[in-house]
Image 1 (cartoon, each protein chain N blue to C red):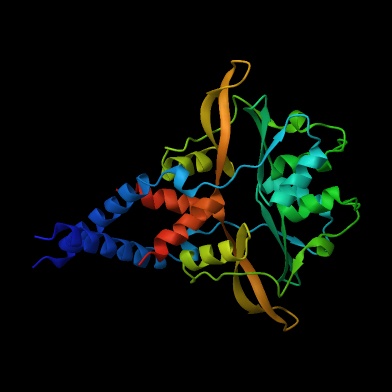
Image 2: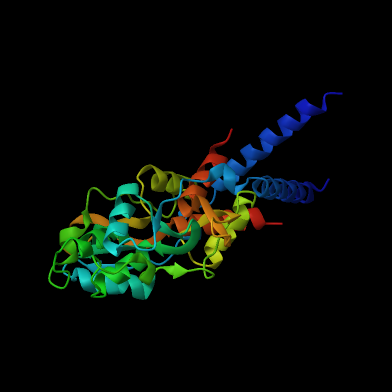
Length: 161
Length: 161
């Protein structure tokens, strides 16, 4: 007798179901391999690595712990800024801990996507808390999740039959 | 009596509903403004525009028609390649028509996302077929859809209550 109400209810519960399903997809299920260099790598060599690995963001580790992130945008700024990219190490231009937004394998892809949008970054390092050989606490980089992974997931879910 | 079968059926039809709903969202509903320069703009000025507008891709028009696309990756390659970015015009380094993947306002976001993934680009120009003042046929650039738009849509749909 009131089909419109029924329709709306059905639609709402379907979307809730979708939201719930999305919330159950973990970062570990859609991750890519991280590309990592050390802090002393020259900006030029880091850019070459970026092209060879065909990624948009490079992670920097120091003594086995995440210490920085450099994006294509950071590299471009550096390359046109008149700095000698052959001499300057990547440590000088990177965004440094603790100003790095990270995610963990058990976090939902939805929460990772929200972090990407809110912090206006292209990708997040997927990390695990560890102690390095010197007993320092920090993050080990075990993966990468980017807007590309999320766009691909969007396509995969929409194409599911 | 056979709850598992019932559960599976329900899940399947829900996902089909989602796929159908996604297919009904048009590119025009999630588009951003395009950033456009002319073919004679220097690479340096185009990079400055990229930073000022905070986009990842710039579109190039000639006589009012889409003639090229330049990404952050193209700019970075050019900046470290030893070319004089103050003298070289953007027309020299851009990807040129007809090698540009485009979308139209009525295309579904899903189809645009598939193009982005398959052609490994960060964004697509949203275009309309027109004739310019010289009677030449081509595309007018009316918008832009990127992995950022799709990631945001993913979050919006998943957060819908």
